[in-house]
Image (tube, rainbow, N blue to C red; front, side):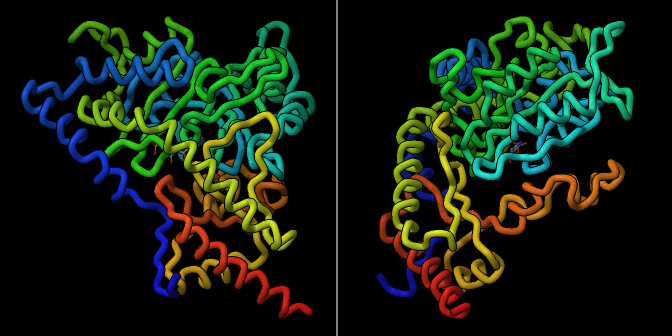
Length: 403
Ligand SMILES: Cc1ncc(COP(=O)(O)O)c(C=O)c1O
């Protein structure tokens, strides 16, 4: 290993080079048949991805953001309703809620899994809301708005703790839409049902992103919704296609939100490799855990809760002074990221909601300490060792400095 070893944060070139012939075949097929929109490649991918997620239906759409928005609309979230989610997620989760005409409410995350804390959800529903028997709905006391849905985000490739969330949702008649945009293939052990369940098979619907850097990424923009509800699937097909089930017969105003056939065909090619890629991510994560063991409390490595089998979309550690760590790694040509530096409730875009610093302390603490290290299936052992040795170098210099 030389000091010149470069480690990208993500390598998107190698997997596409490996699959080049199969991917080009998809383009050839589309060119030869002019099958660009809809058709067999889309239908085949939808069937395969539904099966992969243990869901009855999959509806291909053009992004994870639209997948969420269409799911809210088709599930019956209405203008002015409240949808509850976490402030520690990518803004697309909350953009989709607002774009569906709903209002946001946040609850904090759990400090070891970084996903929705079911206890915080319970507190919000029990303390800040009351059931209106006349309307048959849960109402937020302050705003008097009905609370209609909850969005657990399976962040970094690990599912939220779904049993208690599903129980609360059932008790208060809330729609659950999983944000599975970072969790293709992640699993959750439901103690209630004594069975492992796939991300995308638990809520009323689930949204997936196939943005190129995701565990299953397209060669452009793409997304999908999975559901076990046939009627809802049909509504989402109509919404994604200008509100028409039959060409030029528009039952509602919809969107141009379709998944194009070339992307669908390419996703089918890559889906065949997803199991192997996810396994490789899990092995890399476990090796990172082991190699960082001697750093003890100086680095908090991701904790995989016993009820989850994560797919490590990201490998996120927590350290003091993460800006200096990023600089140190940058000087060694090692790529890093921060997912995400500013909690959503403190973003300028949400100033009007009136949240303030201190409202979600776990999210706020985590946001100051997290760093995402290189994580992709083709990361070599040497590259990984280089990352670890540079991180350890940094951590030990800090320990030395404080002695
Ligand atoms: C948690 C989460 N939700 C939603 C999205 C939105 O997906 P897309 O970029 O495909 O619209 C993303 C994508 O980065 C995401 O990470």
